[in-house]
Amino acid sequence: MMEREIPLYTTEGVKNAEITTHSFSTEDKLGLSLQRFKRDDCEDIVVIIHGLTTSTDMYIMPEHYNLVSYLLDHDFSDVWCFDFRMSNRYSYNLIPGKYSMDDCALYDHPRAIEEIRKQVGPDKRIHVICHCLGSMSFMMALAAKTVTGITSCISNSIALTPRLHNWSEFKISYVPTILEGILDIPYVSPRWSQDPGFSRGKVLSKLVSLFHRECDVPACHMLSMMWGTGWPALYHHKNLHEVTHRRGGDLYGGTMMSYHRHVAKMVNGNGDAMKMFPEDARYAALPKNYMQEAKEIETPVLFMTGQDNKVFTDSNIVCYEKLNKERPGFHQLHVFPEYGHQDVFMGKNNDKDIFPRLLTFLEEKRNAAVMSIEAPVVSVS
Image (cartoon, rainbow, N blue to C red):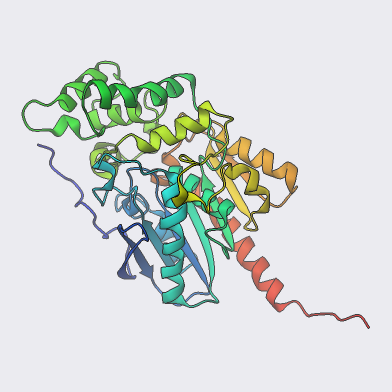
């Protein structure tokens, strides 16, 4: 049995802040929550969104200087972390079903912004930092206009043009059917090695570890199987605190295959973010092709990615380049050398290597918004 070095769901990584939890329900009847870290009143609210199977925990890690603490220390004193239906703090990922990014874009992100507005009022500026499929689904919400009024957005790794390595494309196209249809396994988990006794998951975990000799952490091996192509796939080992590496089974949860199938549909289609079930009337408010609507997004976006991204490769570079042709200079792109998919937020040196660039973007968009308000109105008679 694994001995925890850091408590599960701890907030001890954020000091000198008022921490509150705000729960709400979606229109399709799921309970979700926002965790607020407030040090002082602030006109600029930052909302941070995790990716599939992670949670708020990836932004408040006590083993290093984390993103929430960094923002609080740098004049963004009211930070909200959103645990939506992909969070490992909930059991929704373990229930076989048909959830897709469309559900997040239609139900989760609009309700979260609505709840924040209830708490902070209608006039505060809201900036969003989003990651992985949390980034993709939030960008889908912006394209579909289910979320509006966002001052700026930082999108990591993937937005509206998913790209995968060939091996990842093969896995995402065929492994869900093998697991569910042949092996009768409803979800895949990085914690399978911790199963008591004998289980099919535990056997698969051991088989996966046979092909991953780069470290001795089974959860790390499973994460490489679940996402991406590499040894390891999600990050560079050198960028992680060893405690972070060892507690991967806590920081990432299990998931059923429906989100994989949605990404596979996009990749195997025209490479754009597409609606999963276009004939389903519940999603009539969403566009069939989100990328076709993206030129209408009024929120400036910083598209970021690690140069060694082995999960979604150059997805955000492609998205930026396409949108920059439509509206030159409106969005920005930054590629971080010697970083991958996950370590840009969970790395031990992020406060030196990554966060200053994000802060520069947030300050730039905050200042631009202030100047637009303060600029005098000139009338011509």
